[in-house]
Image 1 (cartoon, rainbow, N blue to C red):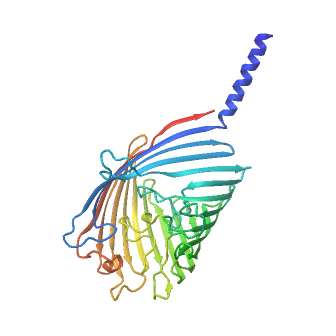
Image 2: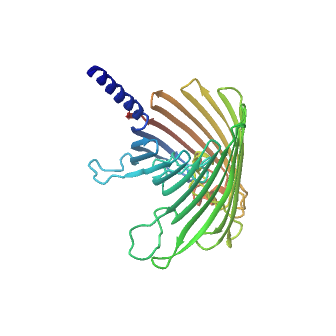
Image 3: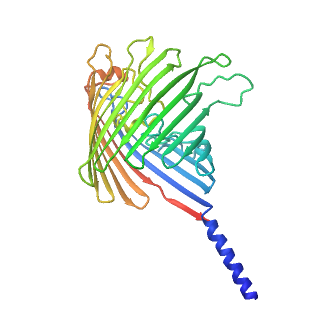
Amino acid sequence: MKRLLLAVAVATLTAVGVSAQQDNEFTVDAELRTRGEHNNGAIVPRIDQEQAANFINERARLSVSYKRSNLQLKASVQHTGVWGQDAMNQDNGRATMNEAWARMNFGDHFFAQLGRMALDYDDGRLLGSQDWSVSGSWHDALRLGYEDQHNRLHGIVAMNQTAENNRGDYYAGPMPYKSMQVLWYQYQSLLLPLRLSAIGINVGRELGTQGHGMTWYQQTVGANVSFQPMKWGLNLTGYYQMGTNSDGRDVQAWMASARLLFDLSQSVALYAGYDYLSGNKDIQKVNAFNGLYGSYHDFYGAMDYFPGYVYCGLNDIHGGLDVTLGSKVRLKADYHYFMAAEDVRGNDRPLGHEIDVQFAARLMKDVTLRGGYSVMFAKPAINYVKGAGSSDEWQDWAWLQLSISPRIFSTKW
Protein backbone atom coordinates (compact mmCIF):
# COMPACT_ATOMS: atom_id res chain seq x y z
CA MET A 1 0.00 0.00 0.00
CA LYS A 2 2.81 2.39 0.89
CA ARG A 3 4.46 1.70 -2.45
CA LEU A 4 1.15 2.30 -4.24
CA LEU A 5 0.58 5.60 -2.45
CA LEU A 6 4.16 6.64 -3.19
CA ALA A 7 3.72 5.76 -6.86
CA VAL A 8 0.46 7.75 -7.04
CA ALA A 9 2.13 10.74 -5.35
CA VAL A 10 5.08 10.67 -7.72
CA ALA A 11 2.78 10.37 -10.74
CA THR A 12 0.65 13.27 -9.49
CA LEU A 13 3.65 15.52 -8.89
CA THR A 14 5.05 14.61 -12.33
CA ALA A 15 1.75 15.43 -14.01
CA VAL A 16 1.56 18.75 -12.17
CA GLY A 17 5.13 19.53 -13.19
CA VAL A 18 4.50 18.71 -16.85
CA SER A 19 1.36 20.85 -16.81
CA ALA A 20 3.17 23.73 -15.14
CA GLN A 21 5.90 23.60 -17.78
CA GLN A 22 3.39 25.00 -20.22
CA ASP A 23 2.51 27.94 -17.95
CA ASN A 24 5.75 29.72 -17.06
CA GLU A 25 8.66 30.70 -19.30
CA PHE A 26 11.69 32.84 -18.50
CA THR A 27 14.23 33.89 -21.14
CA VAL A 28 17.36 36.02 -21.36
CA ASP A 29 18.44 37.41 -24.75
CA ALA A 30 21.56 39.37 -25.65
CA GLU A 31 22.54 41.47 -28.67
CA LEU A 32 25.85 42.98 -29.68
CA ARG A 33 25.64 44.93 -32.94
CA THR A 34 28.71 46.70 -34.28
CA ARG A 35 28.63 48.77 -37.49
CA GLY A 36 31.43 50.63 -39.24
CA GLU A 37 30.49 53.40 -41.69
CA HIS A 38 32.35 55.37 -44.35
CA ASN A 39 30.24 58.49 -44.90
CA ASN A 40 31.29 60.38 -47.99
CA GLY A 41 27.99 62.12 -48.72
CA ALA A 42 25.15 60.29 -46.93
CA ILE A 43 22.35 62.24 -45.20
CA VAL A 44 23.72 65.59 -46.47
CA PRO A 45 25.75 66.02 -49.70
CA ARG A 46 29.39 66.88 -49.04
CA ILE A 47 30.97 70.05 -50.36
CA ASP A 48 34.13 70.52 -52.42
CA GLN A 49 37.23 68.93 -50.82
CA GLU A 50 35.33 67.97 -47.67
CA GLN A 51 36.77 64.85 -46.04
CA ALA A 52 34.76 61.70 -45.51
CA ALA A 53 33.68 60.64 -42.00
CA ASN A 54 34.64 57.21 -40.66
CA PHE A 55 33.31 55.78 -37.40
CA ILE A 56 32.12 52.61 -35.67
CA ASN A 57 28.90 52.60 -33.65
CA GLU A 58 27.74 49.86 -31.35
CA ARG A 59 24.65 48.62 -29.56
CA ALA A 60 24.87 46.28 -26.56
CA ARG A 61 21.46 45.09 -25.40
CA LEU A 62 20.34 42.65 -22.69
CA SER A 63 16.68 41.60 -22.45
CA VAL A 64 14.85 39.47 -19.90
CA SER A 65 11.25 38.32 -20.30
CA TYR A 66 8.72 36.28 -18.36
CA LYS A 67 5.58 34.74 -19.84
CA ARG A 68 2.64 32.67 -18.73
CA SER A 69 -0.82 32.19 -20.19
CA ASN A 70 -2.26 35.53 -19.05
CA LEU A 71 0.79 37.65 -18.22
CA GLN A 72 3.94 38.74 -20.00
CA LEU A 73 6.72 41.07 -18.83
CA LYS A 74 9.82 42.31 -20.62
CA ALA A 75 12.69 44.59 -19.61
CA SER A 76 15.58 45.50 -21.90
CA VAL A 77 18.65 47.61 -21.17
CA GLN A 78 20.96 48.88 -23.89
CA HIS A 79 24.16 50.89 -24.19
CA THR A 80 24.77 52.74 -27.44
CA GLY A 81 27.55 54.93 -28.70
CA VAL A 82 30.53 55.37 -31.01
CA TRP A 83 33.92 53.78 -30.43
CA GLY A 84 36.13 56.40 -28.75
CA GLN A 85 33.22 58.51 -27.60
CA ASP A 86 33.98 57.74 -23.95
CA ALA A 87 37.27 58.01 -22.14
CA MET A 88 39.10 54.84 -21.15
CA ASN A 89 37.75 55.12 -17.60
CA GLN A 90 34.50 56.99 -18.33
CA ASP A 91 31.94 56.74 -15.52
CA ASN A 92 29.01 58.36 -17.36
CA GLY A 93 27.78 55.86 -19.95
CA ARG A 94 24.73 56.04 -22.18
CA ALA A 95 22.84 53.07 -20.84
CA THR A 96 19.06 53.35 -21.05
CA MET A 97 15.98 51.23 -20.63
CA ASN A 98 14.65 50.79 -24.17
CA GLU A 99 11.87 48.37 -23.19
CA ALA A 100 10.01 47.93 -19.91
CA TRP A 101 6.43 46.73 -20.24
CA ALA A 102 3.82 44.33 -18.97
CA ARG A 103 1.05 42.71 -20.99
CA MET A 104 -2.04 41.20 -19.38
CA ASN A 105 -4.39 38.93 -21.33
CA PHE A 106 -8.08 38.87 -20.45
CA GLY A 107 -9.61 35.73 -21.90
CA ASP A 108 -8.60 34.58 -25.36
CA HIS A 109 -8.89 37.88 -27.22
CA PHE A 110 -8.47 41.00 -25.07
CA PHE A 111 -5.21 42.41 -23.68
CA ALA A 112 -3.69 45.48 -22.05
CA GLN A 113 -0.02 46.47 -22.39
CA LEU A 114 1.59 49.24 -20.35
CA GLY A 115 5.08 50.74 -20.26
CA ARG A 116 7.97 51.50 -22.63
CA MET A 117 7.61 49.64 -25.91
CA ALA A 118 8.31 49.77 -29.63
CA LEU A 119 5.33 50.60 -31.86
CA ASP A 120 5.54 49.01 -35.31
CA TYR A 121 2.43 48.95 -37.50
CA ASP A 122 1.82 47.78 -41.06
CA ASP A 123 4.92 48.56 -43.13
CA GLY A 124 6.37 50.85 -40.43
CA ARG A 125 5.85 53.98 -42.51
CA LEU A 126 4.16 56.01 -39.72
CA LEU A 127 5.03 54.01 -36.60
CA GLY A 128 8.16 51.88 -36.80
CA SER A 129 10.83 50.44 -34.53
CA GLN A 130 13.60 52.22 -36.53
CA ASP A 131 15.88 49.29 -35.82
CA TRP A 132 18.46 50.54 -38.33
CA SER A 133 19.46 53.35 -35.98
CA VAL A 134 21.83 52.30 -33.23
CA SER A 135 19.34 53.25 -30.51
CA GLY A 136 16.06 52.16 -32.10
CA SER A 137 12.78 53.88 -31.20
CA TRP A 138 10.27 53.43 -28.38
CA HIS A 139 7.24 55.05 -26.76
CA ASP A 140 5.86 55.22 -23.21
CA ALA A 141 2.25 54.22 -23.72
CA LEU A 142 -0.83 52.23 -22.81
CA ARG A 143 -2.02 49.82 -25.49
CA LEU A 144 -5.42 48.07 -25.34
CA GLY A 145 -6.37 45.47 -27.89
CA TYR A 146 -8.60 42.74 -29.26
CA GLU A 147 -7.24 39.98 -31.52
CA ASP A 148 -8.68 36.88 -33.17
CA GLN A 149 -7.99 34.91 -36.37
CA HIS A 150 -9.40 37.59 -38.66
CA ASN A 151 -9.29 40.83 -36.71
CA ARG A 152 -6.84 42.93 -34.73
CA LEU A 153 -7.95 46.16 -33.05
CA HIS A 154 -5.49 48.28 -31.03
CA GLY A 155 -5.95 51.55 -29.18
CA ILE A 156 -2.89 53.44 -27.90
CA VAL A 157 -2.62 56.40 -25.54
CA ALA A 158 0.64 58.22 -24.73
CA MET A 159 1.24 61.32 -22.60
CA ASN A 160 4.68 62.84 -21.92
CA GLN A 161 6.04 65.22 -19.31
CA THR A 162 9.60 66.21 -18.31
CA ALA A 163 9.10 65.92 -14.55
CA GLU A 164 6.57 65.62 -11.75
CA ASN A 165 5.62 69.30 -12.02
CA ASN A 166 3.91 71.09 -9.15
CA ARG A 167 2.11 73.30 -11.65
CA GLY A 168 2.15 74.03 -15.36
CA ASP A 169 1.69 71.50 -18.11
CA TYR A 170 4.14 72.74 -20.75
CA TYR A 171 6.17 70.07 -22.59
CA ALA A 172 8.87 70.73 -25.20
CA GLY A 173 10.80 67.47 -25.33
CA PRO A 174 12.81 65.31 -25.47
CA MET A 175 10.02 63.20 -27.00
CA PRO A 176 8.74 64.67 -30.30
CA TYR A 177 5.18 64.98 -29.00
CA LYS A 178 3.31 65.83 -25.82
CA SER A 179 0.44 63.40 -26.36
CA MET A 180 -0.56 60.80 -28.93
CA GLN A 181 -3.63 58.62 -29.51
CA VAL A 182 -3.72 55.81 -32.06
CA LEU A 183 -6.55 53.60 -33.30
CA TRP A 184 -5.54 50.74 -35.61
CA TYR A 185 -7.57 47.94 -37.17
CA GLN A 186 -6.39 45.05 -39.35
CA TYR A 187 -8.38 42.37 -41.16
CA GLN A 188 -6.64 39.18 -42.30
CA SER A 189 -8.57 36.99 -44.74
CA LEU A 190 -8.18 33.24 -44.28
CA LEU A 191 -9.59 32.48 -47.74
CA LEU A 192 -7.47 34.95 -49.74
CA PRO A 193 -3.86 36.19 -49.32
CA LEU A 194 -5.33 39.58 -48.42
CA ARG A 195 -4.63 41.89 -45.49
CA LEU A 196 -6.39 45.23 -44.95
CA SER A 197 -5.64 47.76 -42.25
CA ALA A 198 -6.67 51.29 -41.30
CA ILE A 199 -5.09 53.69 -38.84
CA GLY A 200 -5.83 57.03 -37.22
CA ILE A 201 -3.18 58.98 -35.27
CA ASN A 202 -3.73 62.17 -33.30
CA VAL A 203 -0.52 63.93 -32.22
CA GLY A 204 -0.39 66.88 -29.84
CA ARG A 205 2.66 69.20 -29.90
CA GLU A 206 3.15 72.23 -27.70
CA LEU A 207 4.34 75.76 -28.43
CA GLY A 208 4.99 78.44 -25.84
CA THR A 209 6.65 78.57 -22.41
CA GLN A 210 6.09 77.00 -19.01
CA GLY A 211 2.67 78.04 -17.77
CA HIS A 212 1.77 79.63 -21.11
CA GLY A 213 1.90 76.75 -23.57
CA MET A 214 -0.69 75.81 -26.16
CA THR A 215 -1.08 72.32 -27.63
CA TRP A 216 -1.76 71.97 -31.35
CA TYR A 217 -3.18 68.73 -32.71
CA GLN A 218 -2.50 67.08 -36.04
CA GLN A 219 -4.36 64.02 -37.35
CA THR A 220 -3.21 61.36 -39.80
CA VAL A 221 -5.64 58.82 -41.23
CA GLY A 222 -5.20 56.19 -43.91
CA ALA A 223 -5.08 52.58 -44.98
CA ASN A 224 -2.70 49.84 -46.04
CA VAL A 225 -3.55 46.95 -48.37
CA SER A 226 -1.43 43.87 -48.98
CA PHE A 227 -2.41 41.22 -51.55
CA GLN A 228 0.16 38.45 -52.06
CA PRO A 229 -0.72 35.35 -54.08
CA MET A 230 1.89 32.68 -54.79
CA LYS A 231 4.06 34.41 -57.41
CA TRP A 232 3.39 38.11 -57.01
CA GLY A 233 2.22 40.70 -54.53
CA LEU A 234 0.75 44.20 -54.41
CA ASN A 235 1.09 46.67 -51.55
CA LEU A 236 -0.89 49.93 -51.50
CA THR A 237 -0.64 52.67 -48.88
CA GLY A 238 -2.35 56.05 -48.56
CA TYR A 239 -2.47 58.63 -45.75
CA TYR A 240 -4.00 62.07 -45.32
CA GLN A 241 -2.97 64.66 -42.73
CA MET A 242 -5.02 67.52 -41.32
CA GLY A 243 -5.31 69.64 -38.20
CA THR A 244 -2.82 72.24 -36.99
CA ASN A 245 0.96 72.32 -37.04
CA SER A 246 2.96 73.16 -33.89
CA ASP A 247 3.36 76.74 -35.17
CA GLY A 248 -0.40 77.21 -35.56
CA ARG A 249 -0.65 76.75 -39.35
CA ASP A 250 -3.32 74.56 -40.92
CA VAL A 251 -2.19 71.18 -42.23
CA GLN A 252 -3.39 69.64 -45.50
CA ALA A 253 -0.99 66.96 -46.73
CA TRP A 254 -1.05 63.45 -48.12
CA MET A 255 1.04 60.58 -49.41
CA ALA A 256 0.47 57.49 -51.53
CA SER A 257 2.56 54.45 -52.30
CA ALA A 258 2.26 51.44 -54.59
CA ARG A 259 4.65 48.52 -54.85
CA LEU A 260 4.45 45.43 -57.07
CA LEU A 261 6.50 42.33 -56.26
CA PHE A 262 7.13 39.31 -58.49
CA ASP A 263 8.95 36.06 -57.68
CA LEU A 264 10.93 34.85 -60.68
CA SER A 265 11.89 31.72 -58.72
CA GLN A 266 12.26 30.57 -55.14
CA SER A 267 15.52 32.50 -54.88
CA VAL A 268 15.01 35.56 -57.13
CA ALA A 269 12.44 38.33 -56.68
CA LEU A 270 11.84 41.66 -58.44
CA TYR A 271 9.93 44.72 -57.29
CA ALA A 272 8.94 48.12 -58.66
CA GLY A 273 7.15 50.96 -56.90
CA TYR A 274 6.24 54.60 -56.68
CA ASP A 275 5.89 56.88 -53.65
CA TYR A 276 4.45 60.40 -53.57
CA LEU A 277 4.73 62.80 -50.61
CA SER A 278 3.01 66.17 -50.97
CA GLY A 279 5.07 69.35 -50.49
CA ASN A 280 4.59 72.94 -49.36
CA LYS A 281 3.03 75.31 -51.88
CA ASP A 282 2.96 78.50 -49.77
CA ILE A 283 3.77 79.67 -46.25
CA GLN A 284 0.14 79.99 -45.16
CA LYS A 285 -0.47 76.23 -44.92
CA VAL A 286 1.56 73.10 -44.27
CA ASN A 287 1.20 70.87 -47.32
CA ALA A 288 4.35 68.79 -46.78
CA PHE A 289 3.56 65.30 -45.55
CA ASN A 290 5.11 64.28 -42.23
CA GLY A 291 6.07 60.61 -41.83
CA LEU A 292 5.82 60.98 -38.03
CA TYR A 293 7.77 58.21 -36.29
CA GLY A 294 8.24 55.66 -39.06
CA SER A 295 11.27 53.74 -40.29
CA TYR A 296 11.98 55.98 -43.30
CA HIS A 297 15.39 54.30 -43.84
CA ASP A 298 13.45 51.34 -45.27
CA PHE A 299 11.72 53.42 -47.96
CA TYR A 300 13.51 56.47 -49.35
CA GLY A 301 16.99 55.23 -50.08
CA ALA A 302 19.65 53.83 -47.76
CA MET A 303 21.64 57.10 -47.75
CA ASP A 304 18.83 58.78 -45.76
CA TYR A 305 18.66 61.98 -47.80
CA PHE A 306 14.90 62.10 -47.31
CA PRO A 307 13.52 61.53 -43.81
CA GLY A 308 9.79 61.32 -43.22
CA TYR A 309 9.41 65.07 -43.82
CA VAL A 310 10.62 66.91 -46.96
CA TYR A 311 9.38 70.50 -47.28
CA CYS A 312 9.15 70.37 -51.09
CA GLY A 313 7.57 66.90 -51.10
CA LEU A 314 8.94 63.90 -52.93
CA ASN A 315 8.42 61.62 -55.92
CA ASP A 316 10.29 58.34 -55.56
CA ILE A 317 10.31 55.92 -58.49
CA HIS A 318 12.12 52.79 -57.37
CA GLY A 319 12.81 49.17 -58.22
CA GLY A 320 15.08 46.37 -57.15
CA LEU A 321 16.30 42.80 -57.18
CA ASP A 322 16.45 40.38 -54.25
CA VAL A 323 18.51 37.18 -54.56
CA THR A 324 18.83 34.38 -52.00
CA LEU A 325 21.85 32.08 -52.29
CA GLY A 326 21.23 28.90 -50.37
CA SER A 327 20.14 29.34 -46.77
CA LYS A 328 22.88 31.71 -45.62
CA VAL A 329 23.41 34.54 -48.13
CA ARG A 330 21.07 37.24 -49.40
CA LEU A 331 21.85 39.97 -51.95
CA LYS A 332 19.82 43.09 -52.72
CA ALA A 333 20.14 45.87 -55.28
CA ASP A 334 17.84 48.93 -55.28
CA TYR A 335 17.46 51.96 -57.53
CA HIS A 336 15.68 55.26 -56.70
CA TYR A 337 14.90 58.23 -58.88
CA PHE A 338 14.00 61.22 -56.68
CA MET A 339 12.14 64.32 -57.76
CA ALA A 340 10.57 67.15 -55.74
CA ALA A 341 6.77 67.34 -55.69
CA GLU A 342 6.85 71.17 -55.72
CA ASP A 343 9.20 73.80 -57.16
CA VAL A 344 12.55 74.20 -55.40
CA ARG A 345 13.48 77.91 -55.44
CA GLY A 346 13.39 78.18 -59.20
CA ASN A 347 15.37 74.98 -59.82
CA ASP A 348 14.24 71.99 -61.78
CA ARG A 349 12.50 69.35 -59.69
CA PRO A 350 14.85 66.34 -60.24
CA LEU A 351 16.89 65.63 -57.10
CA GLY A 352 19.03 62.67 -58.12
CA HIS A 353 19.51 58.95 -58.69
CA GLU A 354 20.52 56.60 -55.88
CA ILE A 355 21.83 53.04 -56.17
CA ASP A 356 22.02 50.79 -53.10
CA VAL A 357 23.68 47.36 -52.97
CA GLN A 358 23.49 45.24 -49.80
CA PHE A 359 24.27 41.72 -48.60
CA ALA A 360 23.53 39.59 -45.55
CA ALA A 361 25.45 36.41 -44.68
CA ARG A 362 24.74 34.03 -41.79
CA LEU A 363 28.18 33.11 -40.46
CA MET A 364 26.92 30.74 -37.76
CA LYS A 365 23.97 30.36 -35.44
CA ASP A 366 23.02 33.78 -33.99
CA VAL A 367 25.78 35.57 -35.95
CA THR A 368 25.08 37.60 -39.13
CA LEU A 369 27.35 39.80 -41.23
CA ARG A 370 25.72 42.58 -43.26
CA GLY A 371 27.09 45.31 -45.46
CA GLY A 372 26.33 47.68 -48.26
CA TYR A 373 27.47 50.37 -50.65
CA SER A 374 25.43 53.31 -51.95
CA VAL A 375 26.03 56.13 -54.38
CA MET A 376 23.96 59.25 -55.10
CA PHE A 377 24.12 61.01 -58.46
CA ALA A 378 22.72 64.31 -57.21
CA LYS A 379 21.07 67.14 -59.14
CA PRO A 380 21.51 70.87 -58.32
CA ALA A 381 18.14 71.14 -56.54
CA ILE A 382 19.36 68.79 -53.80
CA ASN A 383 21.64 71.55 -52.49
CA TYR A 384 18.61 73.72 -51.66
CA VAL A 385 16.50 70.88 -50.32
CA LYS A 386 19.21 69.77 -47.90
CA GLY A 387 20.47 73.31 -47.21
CA ALA A 388 24.11 72.32 -47.75
CA GLY A 389 26.45 70.33 -49.96
CA SER A 390 27.38 70.31 -53.61
CA SER A 391 25.72 68.19 -56.25
CA ASP A 392 28.92 68.37 -58.32
CA GLU A 393 30.85 66.23 -55.83
CA TRP A 394 30.99 62.42 -55.70
CA GLN A 395 28.59 61.23 -52.96
CA ASP A 396 28.81 57.67 -51.63
CA TRP A 397 28.49 55.64 -48.44
CA ALA A 398 29.64 52.19 -47.30
CA TRP A 399 28.95 50.15 -44.18
CA LEU A 400 29.72 46.78 -42.61
CA GLN A 401 27.81 45.38 -39.62
CA LEU A 402 28.22 42.32 -37.41
CA SER A 403 25.19 41.23 -35.36
CA ILE A 404 25.41 38.65 -32.57
CA SER A 405 22.01 37.88 -31.04
CA PRO A 406 21.94 34.68 -28.94
CA ARG A 407 19.30 33.48 -26.51
CA ILE A 408 21.58 32.79 -23.58
CA PHE A 409 19.06 31.30 -21.17
CA SER A 410 15.59 29.79 -21.35
CA THR A 411 13.61 27.75 -18.88
CA LYS A 412 10.05 26.54 -18.40
CA TRP A 413 8.32 25.28 -15.29
